[in-house]
Image (cartoon, rainbow, N blue to C red; front, top):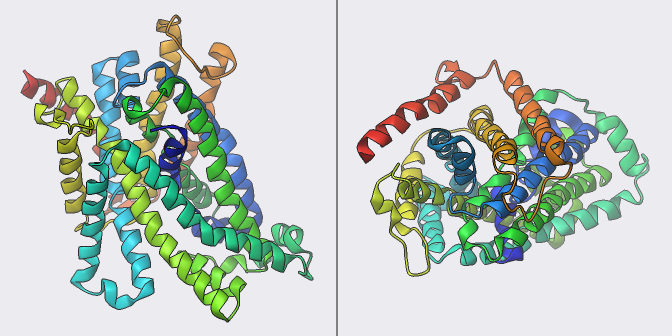
Length: 437
C-alpha cells in the first residue's frame, strides 16, 4: 500500500463518512455538535495520529500496536493489547453487516425480509474475506474508490445546503448554530461518547505495517491527512444541513436520507439524492467491515509468530496475506451475527480505551528505554510532548466511562461487563503460554 490507499483504508477504519453522526446532532443540537466535531479531533484524533505516526514509522512491524506495546512493556502487556483489540472486535464487527442490511432494506424491504437479512450479512462477511485475500493493496485501493462513491451524495448535500442557506431569512448558519433550531443540549455526555466512538480507530492501520510501502515516511503523512479528511467529512455535511434550515430535532438514525430528500426537493433530484445516500449506507457498512478486517486479522498472525497462538495462523498466500487468520476471524464474526448486539459504545470505549492508553504508555517508555531508536517522525515537544500527547485522550476516555456508569448490559453494568472481558485476557495469556510449551 502506498500513501493514498493507506489514507483510504484509515478513513474507513475510523469513520466511513457522516453516517452515525445523527445521534450527536440529536443529543447536542447543531452548535454544540459542530464544536464537538471540530474540537474533539484536536484533543483525541491529533495526539493519537501523532503517536501512531511516531511508533509506526519507528517500529513498522506486522501487528502494529501489539508489537509496540510488547517491545516497550514485555510479552504480557503486548498480549493484553492484542486481546483488548480482538475482544472489542467481537462487539464492533457485528455492527457493520447490520448497517449494510439496514440500508439495503430501505431500498426494498423485501430484500432483507426474513432469512434474506441474515444471508446479506453473511454475504458481507464472505465478500470482505475474499477481498482481503487479495491483499492489503487491493483493500486500500478499493477503500479509495468506495470513499469517493460514498461521499459523492454528501458533496451534493453540502452544495444544496449552502445554496438554500443563502436566502435563509432567519440568518442562515449563524442563527441556527446559536439557537440550535429550537433544540438545546439534551445529552452532552452522550454526544461526547458518540463523537469519541466516531473518531476511534486511528491505530488500526498500524497492524499492516509490513505491507505498506516506505512505512517510515508513509504513516505520519497518512495519519495527518486522514485526520483532516475525517474532520471535514463530519463537519461540512453537519454545517450544510444546519444552514439549509433542517431542524436539529429531526435528526435520528437514518436522518441523512430525509435530509437529502428535503434539500433535493420533491422532484427527481430529491428522490435520486435520497437513493444515493441509502446506497452510501451500504458502502459504509461493507467498507468499514472490509478495512477493519484487514487490521484485526494481522493480530492473530503476530501472536502466532510469538508462540501465543496456534502456528497454523502463520500460513500466508504468495502475496503475503495471512489467509488462515482471515478465514478464522471471518467465521468468528459471522457467528457473532446471530447474537443480539446493539451499538455498545460504552463497552467499545472500555476495551479500546484501555488498549489506547497502553499505546501512549509505550510511546513514553520507548522514549526512555530506547532513546537511540531511529524515529523518522517524532511527536513534537520532546519528552514533554510525548507525555502530554496521552493526557487529552486519556481524560476523554475517563469522562466517557464516567458518563456511561449507569448503562446496563444483560442486567449488569456495561462497564463491569467490559472490565470482565478485558481482565479475562490475563487468564488467556497464561493458558496460551502453557499451551505453547
